[in-house]
Image (cartoon, rainbow, N blue to C red; front, side, top):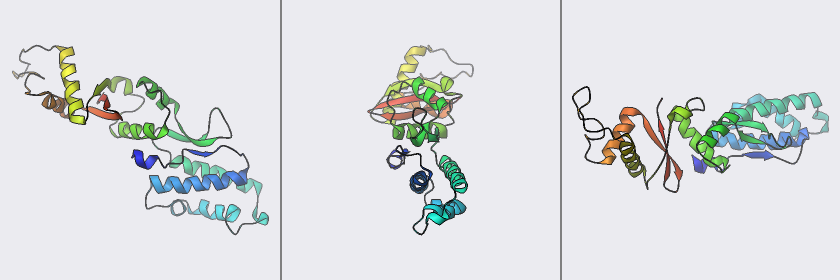
Length: 223
């Protein structure tokens, strides 16, 4: 996912507000975004009326006689809406808050707060988009992230990172060795190793790890 999103048209235009120029730039971005987000379904095939209008106004065979300000402005709105449909989870398409002439895909306010909660200072949209897509797939969103986020752990792979987290959690809980209500030995004492302890947390309690690179992982729990 991250390799694919590295080619995503995050910034579409920052040097013009002319409708005729924006139509061309947004059209190009829409074709690129469609290729990434809906493989096998090109922009023209998914938005036939918009594509036909673009050809009429700014296509190879267009000319000044074809131009109509009101229709072109409506086409720009339609194209903007189409681009919004290609926005990765947690992002929206539009003008930058700080620069009304800079158009692209931006992180929504609620996901900005999530990134701050997770301690991210970098603003690379490619890495954020990949992580947000993974979190969304696990049912984690801005509404429940405060309850589901469990901290960070380390490990060269998911098994070792999970084992490290399971051991640390057990030490923090200090559950003792008393039998639980069912008469069974409680977690984590029933396990021989911490990898097995982590597997029970993952399968039984909905714990999940999400890599953020460099051997660092975020820990979440289903809520």
